[in-house]
Length: 106
Image (cartoon, rainbow, N blue to C red):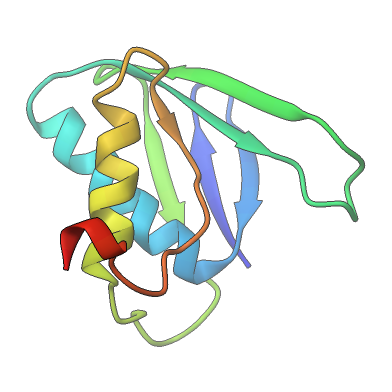
């Protein structure tokens, strides 16, 4: 489990290192272009049910803290799926990792 640390005072949420690595790629791409966006995720059942969101802005401090020693291999399909949500009016949403390309794209 890694942490996405955000804001001042600092606030954090824990994500699996693999998911956090993919979120980092998408978030940093948006922030490099000085784009603000919302980020939403669902709580895992162990933490109750529900959703959270926050506004991501280039001027707000953000840190990615990974607990694993190795960088996960990125799944380009997942990065693309996350970027698609990030560029939508609803903002970035942590969607499940796709295992294969949809039949329409084949």
